[in-house]
Amino acid sequence: MEIHTGEIYGKQTATKFVMYNVLKVSKSIVTLQNIDNPLSLFETTAQKLSTSGYVRISQTPYIDLQASTPKKRKAARKPTRCPLTFDFLEDRADSQRPAPILPDLFN
Image 1 (cartoon, rainbow, N blue to C red):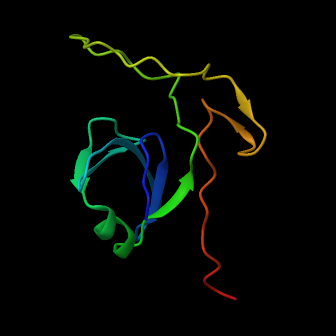
Image 2 (cartoon, rainbow, N blue to C red; image 1 turned 135 degrees about the horizontal axis):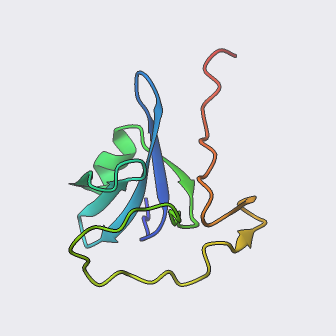
Image 3 (tube, rainbow, N blue to C red; image 1 turned 135 degrees about the vertical axis):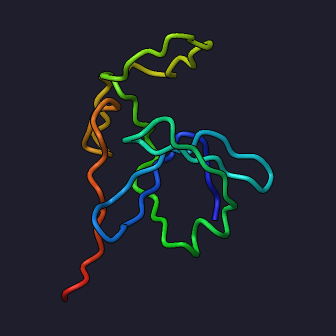
């Protein structure tokens, strides 16, 4: 399984569908950030990611235009393209949340 920075992965929990942004990929470690809670980060491996039920939702990065700025601001990574760019293959702009892909459990 090949994982790249900027991809979005999701996992169905008992109550909701949670999406994670891939922040960093090293040789064996993948760092994920919860899209709804930017302070929530965790590290895992690509193998654990696939065996734990995470599904790749999008290869286009999600850029939150409503994000609040922290008091002490580190050097912000600039997006490589405009957040309002509409990606017709993904059928959404970069600033729009990707639609979760839910498996058909009842058919």
